[in-house]
Length: 273
Image (cartoon, rainbow, N blue to C red; front, side):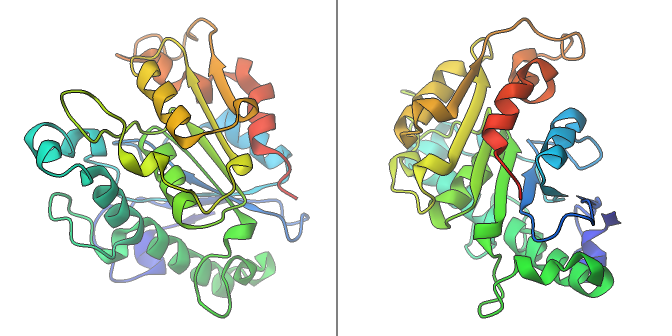
């Protein structure tokens, strides 16, 4: 199912690529996997094999369309980061919730991840009543029913998933090479928000990256700062697949795109039922 953000919310006028929804109508009351892509990515290119695995695990999937360009690593760098150690957290808050002022990115409230997700669930509740989509909204607050929603993503999207888990108790976090924000541009010190207490239990936070990707040391430091349990961390070490070999940082997408890691995907996903 394809839904333009502007269909769900007429106030949307930028980054209007389709939201894409996948689900098996025969499975009732299952969890949603909210999928968030990386910098510059859109829902025109989704991780097909990983999505198949998630559907087989019993999930519904919402590949959400949101502004992905520029990314944190393009804005919170150099002098800007040096004068504001919390730059990355402010950036992510605006892109996720749309409730702060961060003029360095074009995101308006209606472009933010959570407002777009809420509008999509409301749209689906009306236009696909058989899907019983209202169960994914808290009927008292109108906010997402996070206990029924796992949040996954790659690169920038993985960092967004982790940031959401800092503020809400989600069913599960599944982060592939998720963002490695800094609080200092010279020392490359990992941003402070990673070491703050998460509302989501750490036992529900999973992460994967490849030992040969360019930022592997930073990703390892970030996971350590988050205190992700060792059993929830998957570090790939297989050779790059032919589909990614021409990328400038080919191993950055390996843990998500290479089916050799399917067993890890299943452990990270758990059951969606």
